[in-house]
Length: 117
Length: 109
Image (cartoon, rainbow over all chains, first blue to last red):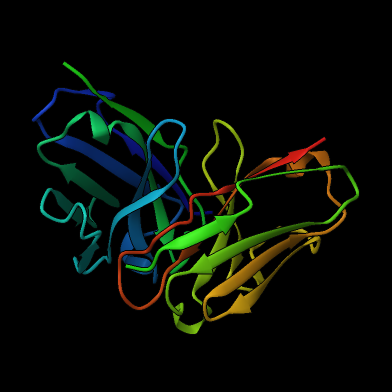
């Protein structure tokens, strides 16, 4: 059964780059028809789609974040990653990775990233 | 960008009653690419409805989705205490961004 798990630093300083990795287990990133996405949720608030990637490397991003976001895939490690540059306190959130087909079929447990000095 | 507006913001009902949650889009949602998620505190969202009316795996038939175009509804019949959660709609049409509604909090009294 396919599962995903987020990992990365829980604390990032303002103006620095937030980097997270999502590890896929129970199946191959390149062996499925999923798009692999990132969604975030600020504490006590709603959900925001950040972007998605296909195993070929094709990406789509939320225009509101596009200038600061890069999503990449490493099929050899069965992982995909998120980089968000020039973070501020407004980027503090729980970050989820989730495969989509195209609805988000299931989600990782999420990882809280706090932006603070 | 398609804006999704959910109503009501909070719904308080008793076990056994029926809940009706609304999701209205600012423009037509392509091919009913509309999903509903349930999120309990401290947990990730869980997909319950996709394609506006198809139940996800393991979702009981008490949950049903309907609608098309700009107006969509999630109905939960025979409410149970474990249905207490925040419910989000999401559109995933042809063009990003794939937006979410602001959520409806369902309380079971």
